[in-house]
Amino acid sequence: MKKNLTNRYIDDTIARIESTFHRVASYKDYVVLYDNMYNNMRLSALYKGESTYLMHDFTCLWIIQGQAMLTINGKEQLLDRKSITIIPPQAAFKMQQVSPETRFAFIRFSEEAILQSYKDLGLYMNRHLHTTYDCTILTTEAFRELMDMYNDFCQGLGHRELQYLNIYARSYCNLIMIFLFNTFDIDTNIKGKAVSRQENIYRQFIDLLNLYADREREVQFYADQLGISPKYLSTITQTYSGKNASEWIAEYVVGLAINLMREKKCKIHEISTILNFPTQSFFGRFFKRTTGMSPKKYTMIHFDND
Image (cartoon, rainbow, N blue to C red; front, side, top):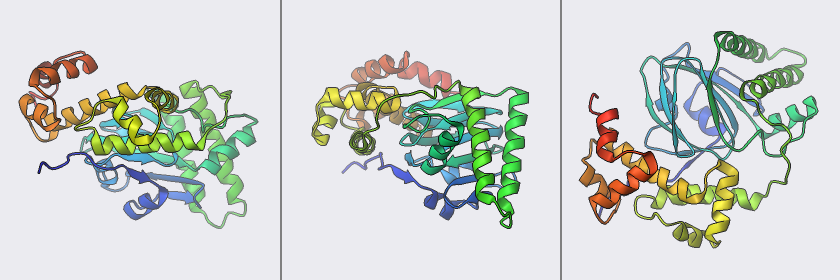
């Protein structure tokens, strides 16, 4: 029997991080800050490349030094020095490659922290900022501003004797929220009511992709598993990730293929067989339709010099 190359997602809770990473600073489960500036912990140790993580909290990640290749909601994203990305709750996150010298920092905000910041700032939003991830490169001035805020935040949270630590944590959360609003030009006036059933369907869809994407590529299959129509499934995935279900499946399958090229050094005909395509040419057309280039050309450009 062929080994299933995919895996179930791992719900990325603060509890998981606590067991993996020595936290730099935190205030209860309200906000957590951590980095590897003073140790050798690598991103690939915190987020193992063979696993897909469903982010539990609103997360802000930036690269201080080095380079990291991530996949967020099925889309590859390269982060260089001074790059910053925000990852919303329910986003599927996977670590692809990290250079050995990479230094990074995280801030993770609980639902309570996000809602409190909106209340403090007099804003309205029921979707925890927005539902798609963003990535940008900061200017030198903006990068320095973020690092100064982060270092001050860490230092303050480290002083447990502060009489008003809860107010301190809230104040810095608000400052960082404002920084992110300005950096990413975030619209804070999103309307509409969040539906928990839709969130559960989205999570289950990610789960099914991890289980079946190496052999099932039809939206109808996933909709049948969830007991809903293909159109409704696409509406939900569009709402939560900015992509319909068909795009999700295509990019996920191509992601599996690229991982086989990179990690397993598999040949194109081997990948076609592993991912259960009827022919190599069928796989080639599928790959090109999604990436804009053939598997052979993609391999030549990205991996021939490895």
